[in-house]
Length: 376
Image 1 (spheres, one colour):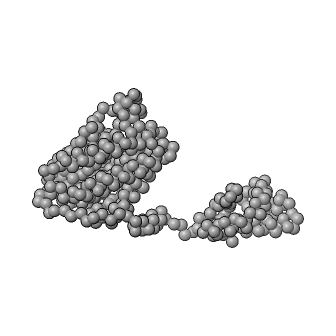
Image 2: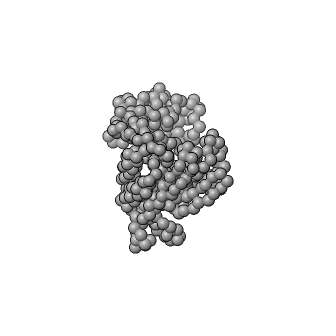
Image 3: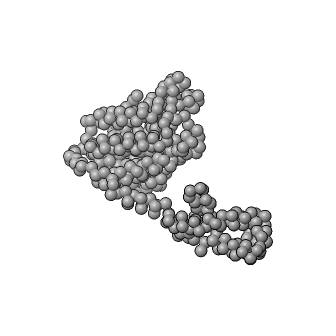
C-alpha cells in the first residue's frame, strides 16, 4: 500500500471515530512525524477527506491503465478521468534502456533498400559532404535584410548544393563518403520558437513540420549519396537545436539501420573523428572549444588515429563564414552556410559572406586534395 493510501486509511478511521480535521492533524503530526506545519497538514487532510469518495474509482482507473495503485502518491479527479502523480521506484529506468527498447521495436518497420553495389575503383578518394548551418525554420524577409529565406528555400538549397558537389566531384574516384549532419540543421528547439538556451528567433513554419522536413531532407540526400559510395554519418550537436537535432539524427540512424553500406556516429559527443587512410578528419559545431584548442583536443581524444595518420583536419561550423588556419599537424577550417540573414544578424552587420554548401575530397595517401563549393 502506498504512503498516500496508508495516510488516507488512517484519516478515515479517525474521522469515523468523530474526530475533526484539526484534531486529526494534531494527532498525525505526533504519530507519523510529519515535517509540515499544523495548518498545512490540516488543509491537506481536508482535501484528502473531500476526495476520499473518489479513491476507489482512482484505484480502478490506475489499474486499468497499467499503473499499480500503490505507486500513486497523489491524484485529482478531472471530470472524466484522474490525473495521477506516480512515485519513482528504486529501480529507475535509464533513458538508454528506453531508447534501445524503442529502436528494437522499430527495426521491424524500417525500410529495406535494394542492395547497393559499388565497382572497385583505382586511386579512390573520400568525399566529405557538409551542408553546414541549414537552419530549417529560419525566416528572413528581403524587405528588412535584403534577402529572403524560409524552410522550403533551406531544403532546396541543400538538395541543389549536394547535387552540385556531386557533379563537381566527377573526375575523382569516390570510394567513401562522409556526411556531416547536425550543426543547426533546425533553427529552433522548442514550441516557443527559441533556441535550446531560450533565445527567441524569427521563424517560418511550425517546429514539428520543420522537423519532418529535415527528416525527409536527410533521407533524400543519403539515398542519393548511397548510390555513389558507402556513407559514414557523423552528427555534431549544436546550439540552436541541441535536443531536436539529436532526436532527428537518431531517427535517421534507425531509418537506415538495415543498410549495410552505412555507418553512424550519432552520440552527443561535441567532437567526432573519422580515419580515412592517412587522413584524420574531425568535425565539431564550433560553439564550444576554442579554435586554437582543437588540435590538442584531437591529439588527446583520437590519440590512436593521430599516431596512424599524417594529414589531419577539423571542420567547424557555427560562424557561417570561411576561415582556415594551419596549426602544427592540423588544419582547422570553418564552413560557409546556405542560410539567409535574419533580422538579428542584419542589425549587427553579420552578413554578406557567400552562401554555400561545401565539400572536400581526401586522397587516402595525400590528404585533402580539393575543396568543392556550391554557391547561391
